[in-house]
Length: 399
View 1: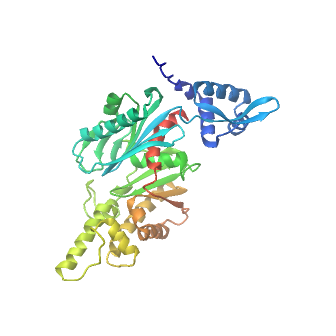
View 2: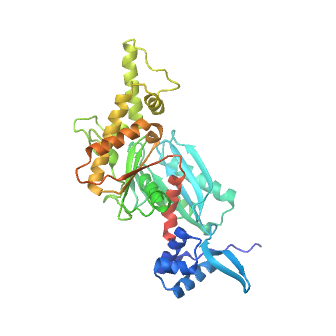
């Protein structure tokens, strides 16, 4: 009978010096023991003791070995990438993406499936359960080496209790006990948060927000959301949901939002709203016998963005209004939190350079006197950092 695989004793990581050393190796590795001591101010004897223990546990490994006249002399240590694994799940309104990562967040497996036809919370839970079981089976993973599953979900999320209170604010699925059900079915630890928070976590782990403790992450897609990193910590409201950029009211007499308020940012710049307004405008043209633009396909937000970026003026007012609403909402958050960095992401930012440039112009024009203009960066939604961000909510317990 084959010997049972060793299950790592990760409890040792929770010792403060150990966690600090692991963080140092993750950030700077491969790195020597002496350099670890210099960067952490931990005594060299302690570094040697802890590093040797972590090597014995299989979490670190010696590398970059030099051959000298006195024999083999190891000079550096690094994270052992295959020591542990984690799953990262990114849920959007219409799609579900899952990745399997190693301890260095290298993606070993991934899948993306449509959930447009999703009709119940049981279906959502089963989708995630089945795909993770498939990956475990196909990879032959030892469950003792799987740290857990990190999940980012849209809508109102209770991260403390692991419940999606309202899936994407649609009212279609309420009170989804995702953490409890998946932990029961898969017997793995599950961490659940709003997807803007998990994406921001990924940015702070290995993206634009590394060493930038005051950052806003902005999402403009089917919905509008924002994650706030302040003094290195994710900000959450008392009810454990993500910052509500999409539901900041920018027009007290505006259209009624699905959240119940009027004139919310999301009523102007969600991709669904842009498509609806574009279709209404084209219908007016049709009724009056006015030729419309030459479409290359269905009238989606991507087609609207293409026409505007190519110089067609018909839909410019729609995208301009959307960008102004986003800019107004962003200015409110910048005035409140004074971030040094703002990361712009989402399918609408990806599709439209005009939208992005207009948002930035609006922010610069409206920002309060004396408030420092933050740096702006763009993150494409196809970047796997989003799924990796969900996985890092599990991995960070080691670091």
